[in-house]
Image 1 (tube, rainbow, N blue to C red):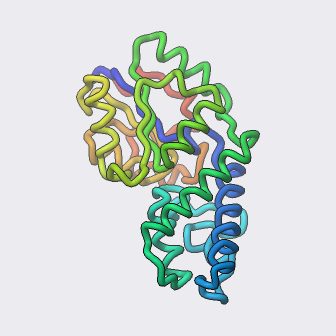
Image 2: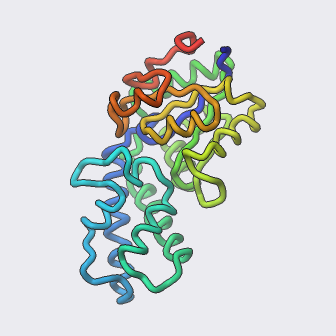
Length: 242
């Protein structure tokens, strides 16, 4: 089957995940706890560690199936809202959580690093005529900022993010958006990602799926769901799946 479009998860697939998102999540948890305790609205016994574990961070390890690895910020906000036993509305709390995550990303630009060889590989595929896209669980502001900071933004024909206005992965909405924007059929698209959710997303849309080991999942976790598992995006050649 001819391949015409290449769609990528962002963090752990194109950009380094662990140092960046551990620090961002730790900072956001600390700040949201301080903000809501200052207002005497948060449950006093909830700790920063509990907030982090609730989204899949165990010390310095990120759970491949946890919210930080695969889900949009709205899901983190919902879990934290429930854990903190807040009486205020979830929409306002979600706005605050997003703002803290976005601020942490903006304040740590040096942690935003493309994975080795990614930029040259993407540029080569673009020169060959492939349509390139991003489908991420991250917010709009954080996505555009981090791709621009990494020097990758101009390479993409489509950037899809999860900001409360479209169903997040593994719902196929973002892949359908890429298909429509670039005039492609799903079976002409390869989805690249580092989580099981990314592979389920590609499957739900009818695309080919390539798992990569530069993020949170192991080969054993990805293989049952992927057409192919590689060490990195840079190891992929389209003829492998043709």
